[in-house]
Amino acid sequence: EQKPFSKWGSLGGDYKPKFVPLDVKPNAAEYEPTSQEKQDAEMILKQLDISFDPKSDVVRNLKMGRLDTSKIAEVPAGNLSVYKQTLEDQDTKEFAVCVLADMSGSMSGQRLEMQFRVLNSIYLALSEIIPEADLHIYGHTCDGDPTIYPFCTPHSPNYLKNITKYYRINNNSNYDGVVIEAVHKKIRETTDRPVILISLSDGQPCDDINNMKKIMERARRDQFVTVGIGIHTEYVKELYTYHKAIFDLSTMPKEVAHILNQVVKTEFQ
Image: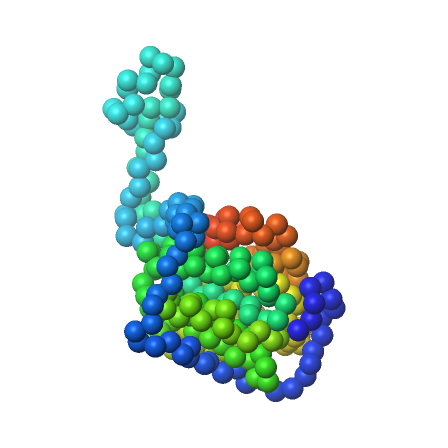
């Protein structure tokens, strides 16, 4: 793997990504999310405010519109924002989500720990509002051919058991491009919905840059909205439609929630 901020390069070769199921016993204990992860999940849900069903939505605290009788008592106190308006067809277009977690060698210490926290928070939040068949979370690394581990997929949906193997994966290199290509094909086997694809990574992939750009463009044309979260690196801005470089890891959950909200509001509402 190349270090963050180094030049793009290519190790060459014809790499064939493989999906490797996690060795989780049927009676294995589930991971118990921390209180912080639960708080992060609530923050994500609050920012998104997604509803796939309603045909209308009431906007309150306006200075014009229909009088909101529940606000009349506030007029003597000087509050003139006592009107409301009903907005029709405010439903969110349905979409699937795929999260790719970089499990390469440089993802160690605080980076690996913060990514773990973010993955758990995203799962807790999105599993509340997105069907099981439309939530995909993978880890990936490379020792020979790129290896993709399914933490949450329609065929292996028990995330809280699968994620217990997070720290047992051998961390080597990262080949984001060919991994995205393989995951793109895998997701299209189960859904034709638009997909928000979120890549978390701390270094520039070993893929050839030109080939990776072609892979990303094919995914975009197939309704994959690409989001790159750069952990201590800005390379993501060169490849992803939406991107954010994060240098203060304590802000990572909040930044991921913010950019996810931006994507949903821009692309699906």
